[in-house]
Amino acid sequence: DAGITQSPRYKITETGRQVTLMCHQTWSHSYMFWYRQDLGHGLRLIYYSAAADITDKGEVPDGYVVSRSKTENFPLTLESATRSQTSVYFCASSERGSSYEQYFGPGTRLTVT
Amino acid sequence: AQSVTQPDIHITVSEGASLELRCNYSYGATPYLFWYVQSPGQGLQLLLKYFSGDTLVQGIKGFEAEFKRSQSSFNLRKPSVHWSDAAEYFCAVGPRGESTLTFGKGTMLLVSP
Image 1 (cartoon, chains in turn red, brown):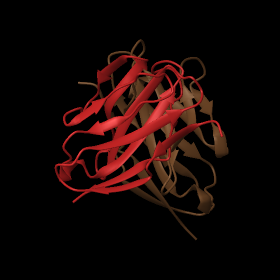
Image 2 (cartoon, chains in turn green, cyan; image 1 turned 90 degrees about the vertical axis):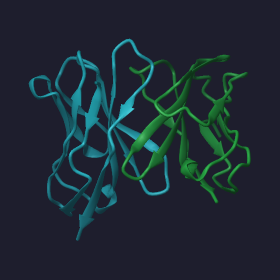
Image 3 (cartoon, helix red, strand yellow; image 1 turned 45 degrees about the horizontal axis):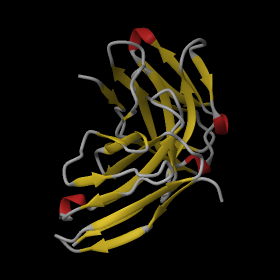
């Protein structure tokens, strides 16, 4: 089916481990975004990408790495997970920048023990 | 500093009653304005957006929002709430010419019978 998908949907990992969250979209949207959602903070932008091989930091990038070798994929890596990274992570895509609707994936619930 | 404020963390409305969710922003110029809804365990879905022109915009599911420049507000309204409207609602702003959105912290809507 067309759309934006995230995997895994749920993940439990230990402190210090590396974990990668996957995001895939089938619309060939130029822009892709990673957010984290925490109680009391709403959605905060981690990283975004305007096109393949172009990425930029958002509000809370520390501890995260992204890459975008293909337009349709935008993985998010936690190189050494910490408990403070326990959160729900959402990927989104849009045709262009802020004037265009962002389409959200279903989210990944990550727990770091 | 640029900001988006949703003053109400929770709102409880009786089914059939009217609803107004508040959103205020602080930006140098009028940004693009959005309202998103998030049902439990799901990603965000766009309800409506304002770019320019008519300050009263209609969205999906019977929602509307009014842009008031003098008050830097973009409040969401619905004349008669249904139990299925129980969800979390996010206001978002996108500065013109930029690539990203800033989300408010959200308002949780509870609908009582």
